[in-house]
Image (cartoon, rainbow, N blue to C red; front, side, top):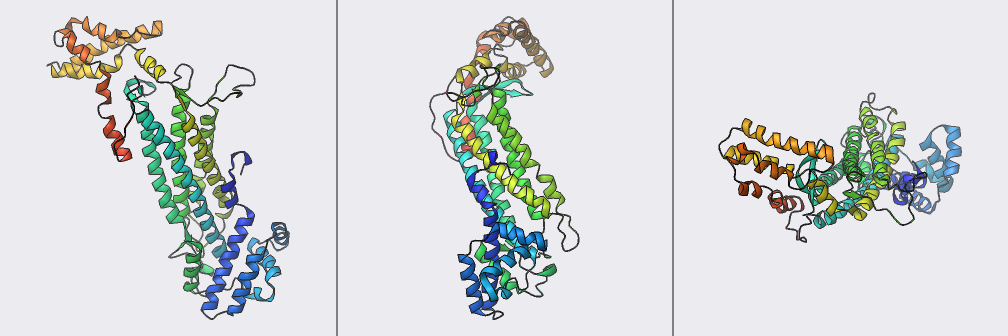
Length: 451
């Protein structure tokens, strides 16, 4: 994990101290269950719980023992015995290391997911606020990076809201799937530990029971979990790339907030770079990087091997830490995004109104022309506007309508008044309310459109 991209809450989930505390909780809950079954003395279970609760596990001491025994769980149990004393012989009865390690990973991933869900909620709240604010802020929609037809900036943001809402739903389901407990002993047969112990530990740790653990929790669960994180990372990058494009000097329809005293370049004092969204693009790559190793972890040998272990020691903390940071950075960007409606309107009109070409095409077909002839007539005028734009950098507002009105083949079918009516921006906004209602589930009051 990189400190630069690590938030304190998520770092705590993956700290050595937190890990060892979970290990102890699993062992202590197992002892409680064994005592209830009459398999160990209740006094021993009480002593284990009491002394362990008061213990401050020494990470350096555990590391020292591990260097000798070459086994992390054995090192921890040895250190735990230093606190508990004679009753330590009742600890870890019938358990395997995987029971402790896999169940701990489930707890950590569940806790990490709760933090991620809070980050998702912040992103969703920011997107909803800004989407409603710009519900009618008209901008040009682009396909292939080229002007297409008008949309609104609010629609861009409410689309992102819908996407992140789906991502949140996937994350909730991924948490449910990963939050499982396995206390089933060697090769998962419960030969030396009762299923009742597993059920008890699961309940105490906020987990459900893995139906068939084969000594390990099957890694298809983990693969699905990290895939869900990877999809969320893709959504983050999609929105980040959109903002990066809109901040380009030639476009400049929106930009990241640039604070007083901020510097954009060590060499060029004029620079205002989209550094936050560029950073989000990089973080998204790091999150997605975990998906393929998680998929490859599914195919383990027989009842278990540890080829997955080294992978998960890296991707579990790093991926959740990076995604946690990215979600809050994205929320910051959206909350403070500077939007330029006038620039959006100016950019849209630089091409002289050719974004209304489809309306004219459809009107000609309804007036009796074939689609092929209608397309030809509209396109030849649109291409003239493109040439004006190419040579002058601005075709001039109304250029397309003017050309259409002077095209006799078109005016034979559509009057000048009819043509002019096709350049009404409200035509493109008439279903915005319905789209918002589909996403947010209610009518949203907004200010008058920014045009």
